[in-house]
Image (cartoon, rainbow, N blue to C red; front, side):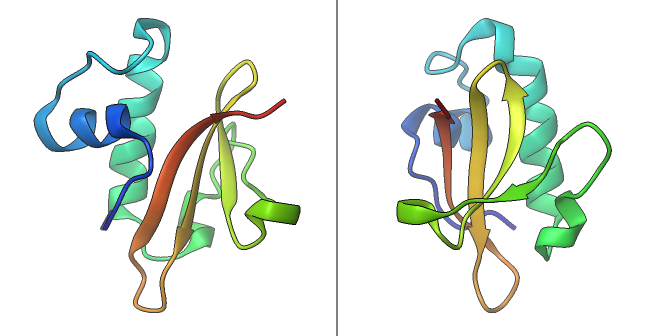
Length: 93
């Protein structure tokens, strides 16, 4: 289950299917990733072919990322009870 978001557009998409804060080219992929993340209870649940799951370092230590498109990544971490938290969409480079 997704507990909280850092990105307002992702939150609106997830909660209300409001796509106004999302790039239309990324909409289908983000819907799929959010559905998968919502069903996940551990990082390993997001390790599917094509997602390129990887841990982050530095300021984002403890977060994991999956590919959205181009330089964009969906980042998140899991709390101690298996909920996704701090979900964000970032331009990776």
